[in-house]
Image (cartoon, rainbow, N blue to C red):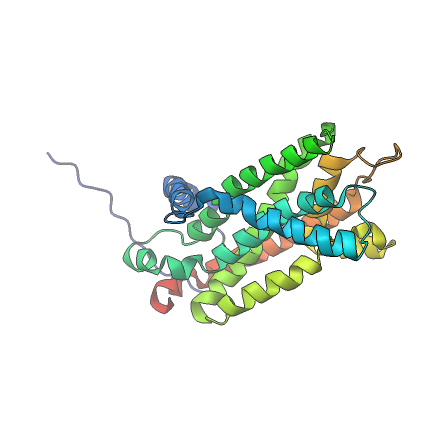
Length: 284
């Protein structure tokens, strides 16, 4: 006797719905496949391949070092300016690429969305997570630069995975908002690059947040990437300042505020995404 396949009935949801993490877990194998697919096609048919993951932040560091570090004399917490800026550009590139690509991920995968049902949230999640490969490549260059300048990582480096997770949560939270909005309003594809440019200069990448006094510095951490960037510098470069004093103090308050802000962004973005998920196949 032939065993019949299980019958699955899919009904549209109405109004706000729960995140239903159980359903997302049931499709975990699809999520793994989407991550692997995004890693494989990211630099397909490019002449320089995965080198772009290094070229973009590296040349941004060179430009910032010339204009802000050398010509403008921007302070860098007593660190060599190339290290100061590149330690911030590595997590920033992960965040900016994750945000930009997740915002357009639903439209880019519209043929898949129209043909089969699965939790649509898997697409932007896979897009952001796949960027970790680029991060690791750029991070290897950062470690090489630190060794070149005679800077060794301290034991604070153990906090780095949590700071990377904070950058991922921030990119995914905002990416969910824009991915859902981009299905209905294609204006989003023009807004995101503009927003990323503004956000870069609103984040302490070319300047240190120590230029701000309290309580403004802590309030500044409502920008989640401010806590990520200062956390990366502290985790990697604390104790590397000239003169023997620690270069970067532990930005505990900033990281705490940034973590709260990023969690709020992620939860609100996930609920908004799930709220309109049922109409993506019709509108995309």
